[in-house]
Length: 153
Image (cartoon, rainbow, N blue to C red):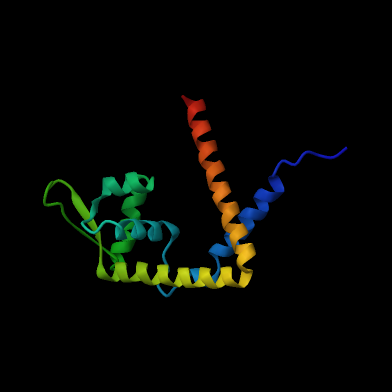
């Protein structure tokens, strides 16, 4: 009798591959950033006028103390600035510094170049299949998330 496939082995293999990709030297640079720092910096790079810590918390889904810790680390590295909010003196605007913006642009360019080379070495058919499968995975993920949200109501 054949056992029904439950996907557990595939989950372990997928997680292992993702961890290996994240540790790849191409994903690092001279100024190491944590995943959270990188995410916050990328988020700030899309908001030229700056955002409040509350807005960062909402956009990233990170708690208040986590956002504060990340901002402290990024400020020490000279990658962000905190300034009084001119429209609400009780809050602070967080903006990306020129050094932070340059770092984000450099990292994005390196990652795009590396990814392009990786996909070229895979070949067009495999690269197209990988993208197709990731798009399918994303669609199914959205459907599952919506289904779980409906079940919680």
